Image (cartoon, rainbow, N blue to C red; front, side):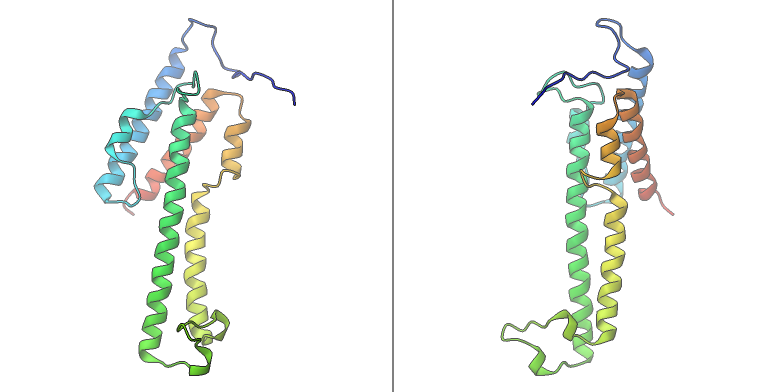
Length: 185
């Protein structure tokens, strides 16, 4: 296997700071911090804690221990994974509630229920199947909107970018999208 050291196309020479980039990094951090504050004020679950504010970095990473923007992106990925899990749990609770509500008003043929009290989805009445499928579609849409899979196109765009400034701009787009989701309608 060949290994090649990669560097950003917008990397400045050693000792020559890019003043514009520093301002963009500071603006990105401000955006993230305001998102953390919005999540807290709305009682969002899951959410970032105030403690994360002190560990954010939007600069270029300089070593495995100083991952810079990539470390912050890693935190974002963890957040999206947790949010996906929470949505899955909410979906399961909503489906269970719908089934329980149906069963409180209707009965099922006893031969369809196994010894553990379980029934196969395809053995449920069509109207209940339709309700369950509608719930699943709605939650699938919410999960798809997260676009948080590491193999997704937006993460692919980050990996393929050879510009720190471009990665920063892409990440800020995601943060703004999350802020928009949290904004009152």
